[in-house]
Image 1 (spheres, rainbow, N blue to C red):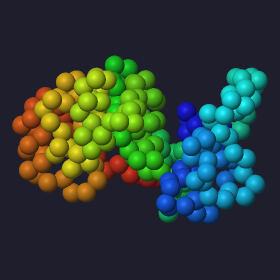
Image 2 (image 1 turned 90 degrees about the horizontal axis):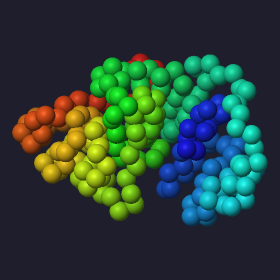
Image 3 (image 1 turned 45 degrees about the horizontal axis):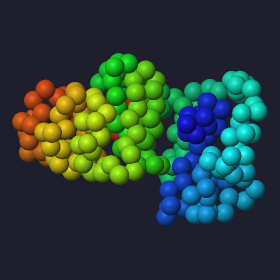
Length: 216
């Protein structure tokens, strides 16, 4: 919700990944929770918004539900990761390409597995919500390397997996899974063959998930 709120307000979000530092982002606001707050780097005069603080909930409740007044253009930055500042237009291009390649419907449920602070995280969150589909967030005990239980229990229909996770996906996860996007390192032919043998009714899309100025 914090990610979507920043984008709607016209800000640029910069994900903080412990161990990688914050670089030279110079944020004007830090959105966090009480567990992560002690591990955050020095952000100068940036105001921390602690989401699980009762005072934060009370302050939000006192505000009127209004749309922000900032006029955005497609070229305004949406988020920044090490080495890249990505504009709204680039996200839009990438999501249009994904929807054309693997159309989602309101009946779909998309599994969110991408690590925080990656390009893949953006499309995994924004793509299903933009298409009217449901976003499935794994629980803290779910294994991201073998999301069998999550796929089965939550009726996941679309997932994005690395080649190694794809190769470890057992037939028990078949269930409602209708499409898998696989990106990352080179996808070996034998992994593709094993997947098609175990999941004969599930489409496999090679996906180079990197949202850039040129979709795909």
